[in-house]
Image (tube, rainbow, N blue to C red; front, side, top):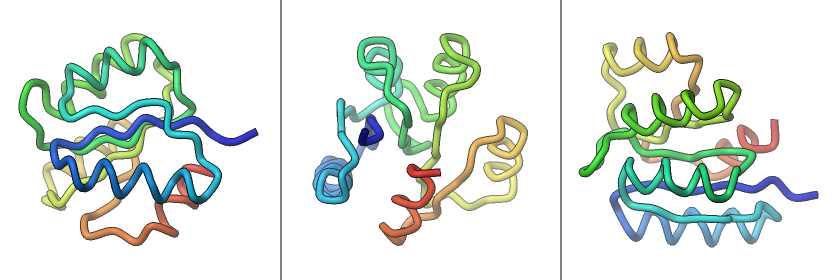
Amino acid sequence: MPKSVIVIDDDEDTVRLFSEFLEENNIKVVGNGFDGVTAVKLFKETKPDVVLIDLNMPNGSGFYAIKKIHDINPKAHIIAVSADGSFATEEKLEKLKIPLIQKPFKMDQVISMIQN
């Protein structure tokens, strides 16, 4: 059974490309969003296997959404996707046990992280 994913990024092209690529690789995209508030709403509605989320977004950052999603389900599988590779960001994600995929990313790396 294919994994279900929601894709959250404030860049619409990134969301579209991600979604198309995931679908082509037998991963079911059950929701798309462009901000942290929508991410939390979609997580509640769709209960995906994986959340792919950007960190720097308007209307609720990725960190805001991660906290809210963890409040709903502490075991939620979240993967951060960001151009922000600063030490502070990496440290925050490490404490939350959330892997970071650095932009620009390799799609095979993304597929591998979703499947495992």
